[in-house]
Image (cartoon, rainbow, N blue to C red; front, side):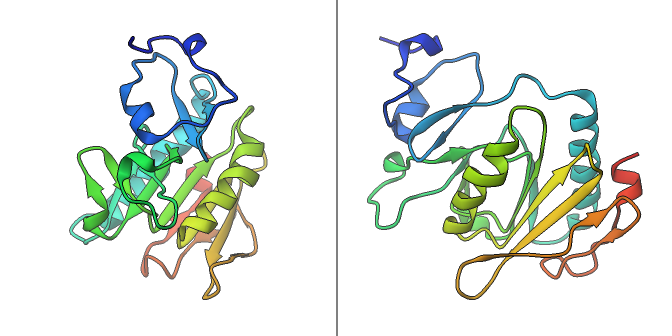
Length: 196
């Protein structure tokens, strides 16, 4: 029987990517370690403007470069260690924006493995998930850099993966600064424009 409504699923059960692929739901959701995480209702206008601007700035910079930028909805499958197949994946996330530099991780379904950069924009209802749950998942998966964008305070917090596989926080950047990253040398984003 096809799953077409969320009420047909047990929210306490752990599901796999194989399960996820069979669902025909209207609701957008993610799988965090197999558990269903409902995504917030459609983000507000300011959230979408920030996502759009960051996507444009990063996308224009990456034009004619080997890395590619993607915007949600875009499935990122974070495999468990030592799993046999993609269908055994228990974590499927849809970052607001991600950059993938290894073309071998891309297929018709999205990205299998850690993107190089993940950007999540906070909004009411997703703050805990982005700051705690997904932070840990991205760190464990090996995402090289994670940006948390806080529209309410007009701040971007950046976390870089060190040689031990641990995220190290950099000084938060405010709307009066220019964002640069060693991950993408030469990229400069005026945050006043992002938050305008």
